[in-house]
Length: 306
Picture 1 (cartoon, helix red, strand yellow):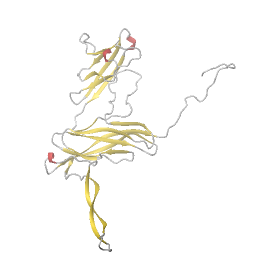
Picture 2 (picture 1 turned 180 degrees about the horizontal axis):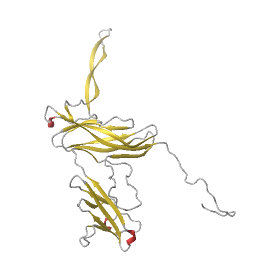
Picture 3 (picture 1 turned 30 degrees about the vertical axis):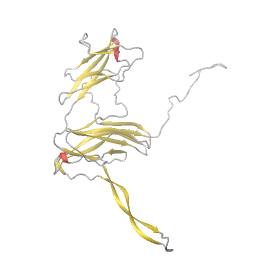
Picture 4 (picture 1 turned 90 degrees about the vertical axis):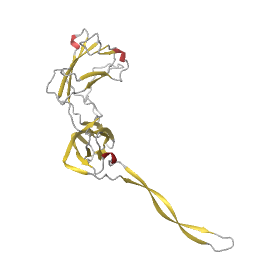
């Protein structure tokens, strides 16, 4: 049995049961009979319990806490987990950023470090990628301002492609961004910094009359294409045949990119947002940990495994 103790002075951390647990009945959260503990769990042999640590800050600052796991009747199996969170407030945010590899920082000690760094919330890690393989990650950009609209633009990059790369974002709106990594040559990106240009824009018309726009949007039009055809008429009473030219309209589909709505950029209201990307693309390499295998003296017909 394991008891969970949470030391949280500011009351910004909490535990929640994840949906990945096969036996949620083995975990008890906020047991009223145990006021000191935040949770208790009974582990069977080989069982795993997944918990989510929720961080809800109250103001802009750095928060620290300690989660202690105590094995009942075994004082030598205690585990200390350091909780560090840093909150911020911004009109424009990049949300739902994740990586294809874990960002866990290995640690051999459980000593609390007050200067421990906070994990980067604006880092995308594609991990190991094969050459000519395309990998895509989805995140979102949000405009929390209640009245201002902004224009965003991601930079061009030889290995990274953003979709949309340019677009508008009205007040209190969110837009999904796809970033794709692909390369034909070996390369390693280590927290490569990409700057998204954010510019405040205004329109002559009310914002609710301005349609949303980004460079993915296309319009489909059908246009008339003149086509010359020959129509042959024959008559029974005449041996002479004649042809009459006639124009028959044909339709062709044309796909065009939507034009950006007219807007005025406020020059003194321009800024940049940082996004960091890591990835490794290379040929596969095989490695053997043993360069030499020495067997002890072995009799005939005897099997020895080394």
